[in-house]
Structures are given as structure tokens and as C-alpha cells.
Length: 405
Ligand SMILES: Cc1cc2nc3c(=O)[nH]c(=O)nc-3n(C[C@H](O)[C@H](O)[C@H](O)COP(=O)(O)OP(=O)(O)OC[C@H]3O[C@@H](n4cnc5c(N)ncnc54)[C@H](O)[C@@H]3O)c2cc1C
Image (tube, rainbow, N blue to C red; front, side, top):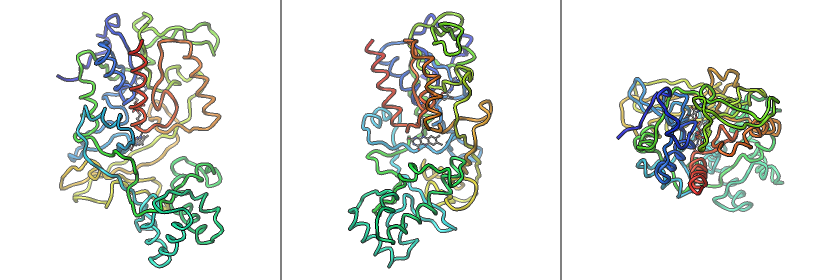
């Protein structure tokens, strides 16, 4: 068996029970569930030339498996999400570690006891660790706001160090901000980890798909009742009918090939794209990725290095750490954060979440609320940041809801 790819022109929607826009985890999990458990004929419309959404990976010219849309590491406390995906992949055990390049010296991130020894020297670090453990307890994550609130000047110094050397410049690059514009509520959450644990995540389940994410998606979508049209933009093929001509008039139907489609439509793309940006585009940050291959086995000691005090890229990922691939050469990826200015050429990666943008999003969302068979789902359609595991769980919940009807 293989995934049933069908040119859009050949799809007969009178023989389709559910339509899904997008083949990331949101779309693919719902598709699989409706087909497998509901016996429904599901058709996926995907604008890219491949399935898998932002998790898509592929082998580059140097033979190295790389991630095309940013490094993706699976980590979760949800046994449901982990076990569900295990139906379509074996898991390679992988615990992600991140180092900050601090003026040429590597320090573990989140900033922890090991980082303190590197930065402050063993003697002072010992004293600081002792004070931290006395004040907050061992194996705890505390925020720099909590540290700043301490009377002890040495604990305030730790907070100041982390703020200036691990957080500030990185965050400015990431969001394109001046230091003054960096949101104090975000700063407040920057953690210091009173631990020797260098892992970036402490979740119960962590790993990478054994043969990569694309192979996982190909397995998930390999079902006789699922078909997929690639290179097809929803907004180009879906006809929208509204209750009136008013700008804010609600949707009354979505047509496909000129006929209203009455089965469930699960939409996982950006809502502003569907409505051709009629209220203006929703703000996002985009990313550029620059890949470099080296004729050496490994370039970096861990999977990701953050550049927290220098360089104009935010971080470098070396994929072989993540994938476990054995090869004499290696590919790394530099990540540059960019303003999102051109939806034709750029990809919306991070929603810029604030009250104004949420209200902007809600205006689009309101257009869809009266259409009973339209279900926005996922990081784009909901204008939110979600990790992969959260999306898998939400997709399973939506499928459950649709199957119960
Ligand atoms: C740089 C980066 C790194 C990340 N790293 C991690 C990580 O390490 N761990 C983790 O758990 N999460 C990570 N995430 C989050 C993860 O990417 C999301 O949880 C996941 O992509 C959500 O899946 P989705 O299906 O909602 O969206 P997507 O994966 O974006 O899938 C949406 C799909 O819809 C398609 N589409 C969009 N618009 C249209 C349209 N108009 N017509 C047709 N098709 C359309 C897209 O082409 C895409 O295939 C990361 C995110 C980013 C940005």
C-alpha cells in the first residue's frame, strides 16, 4: 500500500465524506481516525508538494536527513499522544540538549548548576547553588523574577546574568524587538534550573521517529479511504458563500467544484488566507534556514546551540544528534528570524500573540462560527502556538467529536 495521491481535478466530492485542509499532525490525525474508525472517505487538500506540514523531513544532497521547517523534537507527558504515534513509527530514544554560545564558551540551557560552575567558577557556584537550594529547594525551576525578588545580591546577580547573557539578545532576534520592547511577562518566565540535568525537556516521553517524520506521515495516511491532493491551495478551490454582502457577514456554505460540501471540513491553514486577507493579514514571525554541510562527523557537541550574545542567527541545529544518523559528513542549519511580510514567499511560523492580534484573529473566526460543518484546528487555524503532542491530542478529541455524530 501507499498514500493515495490524486490530482485535484480528478476528485469527485460526491464520493467524499470529509474534507481536510492541511496534512500536518492536525489534519493527518483527524483524517486517519475518520477513515479508520468511522469508515469515512476523507480527502486532504494540501498546498505544499508534500505531506507532513512543518514536521516534513527529507534527505539533502549530502545524504543527511534534515528538517525542512525547523528542528522538531517530540516530547510529551501525554502517553496517549506518544502511544498513538507509535502506531506509525518506532521511536528512537533521544533527549535534547541545548548549549548557549556565550562569547565562545558553551553553557547548558536552561541555565543550571553546571552552567553556574562554568560562568562563576566552582567556588562561587558552590555558594550560589547552596543559597538557591536553601531558598527554593533542589531540582526546581525558578524564574528570574523570583530570583530578582530575593534580598541576597548574589541571587540577584544570577538573575541579571541570565537575563543579559542567555535571554535578552536571543529574544530580541527572535521577535525583532528592541530591549525596551521585550515583554516583561515573558522575561518573568525565564527559568533557572536548580539541577545537574542538562536536558532541555523533562517530559516523560521524548524521542524522534525512527525513520523520520515524513515516513511517519506516509504510514499514517496510508489508508484505503484517504486520498490527498498536493499543490492545491484551499482558497483557490473552495467557494465561499456568505449570509449577505456585508464585510463581516458570516459564512453560509463552502462549495467544492461548485457544489456545497455538507460533510465536515477540518481546516488547519491560516483563516486569514481562506478569506483572502479581507481584514488585513494576521501578524507572524517567519524564519529563514541556511544549511551547511561539513566533511567531518560532527560539528557541535549537542543538537542545538543558541547564539545568545552574538551573531544574527538565533540558533544552529545539527540534525545527526537528533536523528542518530551515522555518516562521515554532517549538515547543520542556521536559523534566522524574519518579519513576515510576503505570504506568497514566506511561511508563517510564530503567531505574534497579543490582545490586538487576538482580536484581529477573532474577527476572522467569527465569520466561520455559523457554519456548522467547519472546524478550524491547529497552530495556524487557531492562531496559537502548540507543540506537536498538544495538536495530536486535540486532533484525537475533534475526531472523537465528529465520530460521535
Ligand atoms: C521552528 C519551529 C520549531 C518547532 N519545534 C517543535 C518541537 O521541537 N517540538 C514540538 O512539539 N513542536 C515544535 N513546533 C511546533 C509544531 O510545528 C506544531 O505543533 C505543528 O506544526 C502543528 O501541526 P499543524 O498540523 O497544526 O500545523 P502544520 O504542521 O503547519 O500543518 C499545516 C498544514 O496545512 C497546510 N496549509 C496551510 N494553509 C493551507 C492552504 N491555504 N491550503 C492548503 N493547505 C494549507 C500547510 O502546508 C501544512 O502542511 C515547532 C514549530 C516551529 C515553528
